[in-house]
Image (cartoon, rainbow, N blue to C red; front, side, top):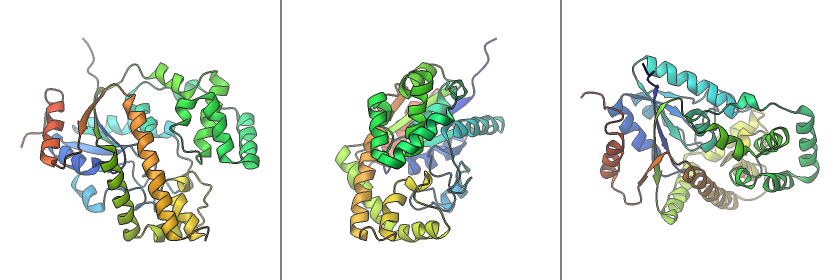
Length: 317
């Protein structure tokens, strides 16, 4: 007898595309518990800049992988994979449908497919060498090394994200192959009965939504949030503080430039990030896409239900 795979529903898409609203509606209908697929929402005290679901939204549907670490914890994709796979089993055992919602492509793929991170070890001496190189020549120069070794992965890692850049270079060094090739080798099979839905929209409209969201974040107190983190001793070289919104606003708080410049820098960097997100998701062939350019939520929700029809049955009313 063939063993039935555990069910897993996933919703992906670039920042500001509208994942939260759709996920809450769908979660209520399909009896889901939501697992955040965002690598930054794990950090406590980083709420506005990571666009976490509100406490009210979290009271409607259980959410996981939010506020599990302080910002100085070295969170990794391997830890994400281990924790989320445990959550999927636990949620399924309780008769609920696990529902990953987010925009961090590598993290989500690591769960959806058969990635074996333990296959590739570490080389502390090589890491130290790369850290010394970055200290001497800067993050951009380190990132240029990755561009030369693995341009596909380099396009998805922010030049200031030293930790991920070094890990990508370390994999090339140890495995003799780029991260992207290792991922392709591992992601052929999924351990789950998998349904991935992606949201997309016209690029210019998405950019306007991004800019409006950032203005809203600033209005909600993003500057104060960054000030509190810095006051608590979380320095700007931490991976968490390199996240969108924190690095740019920290520059303003430290007096490197004015607030208008910080906001424009954040808008530019977020537009670029959304472009990288879309690029990552476009190579995931299992995604069923919904174009949400036209503001017709009920129609988009119906399309979502149509995709799931026959695969995951809604909870009875």
